[in-house]
Image (cartoon, chains in turn blue, purple):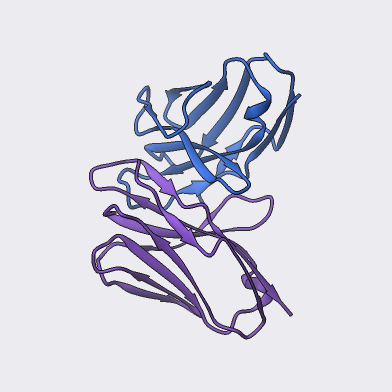
Length: 113
Length: 111
C-alpha cells in the first residue's frame, strides 16, 4: 500500500516563527502536492512538484515556499508564520501523469498563535 | 486557474433515499476524479473518469463524465449512514500536472 506520511498531526506555532512541514511518500511517485483545507474554501493548492528540485506555484503560494531535494520528500515552509495560515495542511503524491490517483497523508492541523 | 463548482454544498437525507451531487466547470478537463474524505483523514479516491460520456459504477455509486468533459455527477442509490462524508471532485486540465479540487459536498445520511 502507498503510504504518505506527514511529520505531525498537530502543531502550534507563534506568529513570526519559521515553520517546516514534512511529507514523505514510499512509492517512488514523481508528483507531490501541498494543499491547505479550510471550511467553506475546500482544498486549495499551494505548491506542487513533478520531479526532484522542480516546483510549481499553485493557486495560493504567497507566504509559503517548498523544497524537494529527494524524490520521496516534499517540504512546505512557512517563512514567517501568521495567524491567517492557521489551517489543515494536506500532502499528496501521485505517479507521473495528471490522471493517476492522488494519495493523501492524514494532514497536519497547524495553529498559529 | 481552472475552477470546479460543486453543488449542493451541504446535503442531509434519510437513509434509503437517492441523491445526486454535481461538479461543473467552464473549462475542459482531461480527467475528473471523485474523492471521499472522513473527518480527521485525507481524501481517498473513489473513481477517475477520462472519456466524455463515460459512466462508471461502484456498488451503489454511479459516476458520469459529461460529453464535453466539463462536468461530472455522482449519484448514490439507497444511501446508507456509512456514506456520510465530504465528497470532492478534482480535475486536471490538458497538459497540466495541477490537480484542482472543488469545495466539496458535505453529505449527512440520517438513520
